[in-house]
Length: 328
Image (cartoon, rainbow, N blue to C red):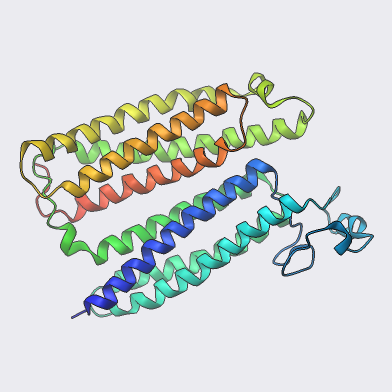
């Protein structure tokens, strides 16, 4: 028998870790949009210091030559970019501590449900690998493929944590009544999750194109970048409408179930409302990128919404998985 206090501690730590992962995704998006990725040209230190300098005078006079010899040409100290990247790293380290505490707290399930423990341990190991991958991103001088892998791994870690926490609450989730949902609901939900992942993949390709254009045409104003975009940008933009209407159908079916019967599906209804809100916000951020000359603030918001959409869809899927009264 698992003590309720220990189970609550595990759940709270897990949820806090998930929020921290999303926070580092947002921070990473800000780093990328602001061009602060090389604000700290070394790792794990920043300009050779554990706490970075605030002024160029605190660096060696020949630091340009030092980092040029290490393969980082044109390294110039910019306090804003340096501290933006440093903050991103601090958040990443915080996640390391949180995931360790979550993994440690999961030991209470070793006898009752070993899967929860192994999910938490796997997430812990992957966070460590994510830290190494972060150093590899810096060492690669911000190669787009490495950045994309870094982001996708964060998405996978979130999925593991959501599954672990949901599994620890499967008794409560089993009370959800999904019997009035149509038989094809589960299939459409899986398709919607697949479309989200495809959209994220296309988004990373668009992001890489923007990075390339910004470096090649650094003298060109942002509002003119659109003229050089590849066809995948227009596919990515149009596909958002398909994703919106697919998820609207899912949300409508959940609303119908809740409205037609006094069933225990309020959690699904709340998650459906959150899902649609996230999708609309992502689309609005995407429209602002397209029509307002790619404002830097919209880029990390767009990225964060995409990751949150996947998380919401995956949680709904897990809820239905543990529901004892599934759709027929």
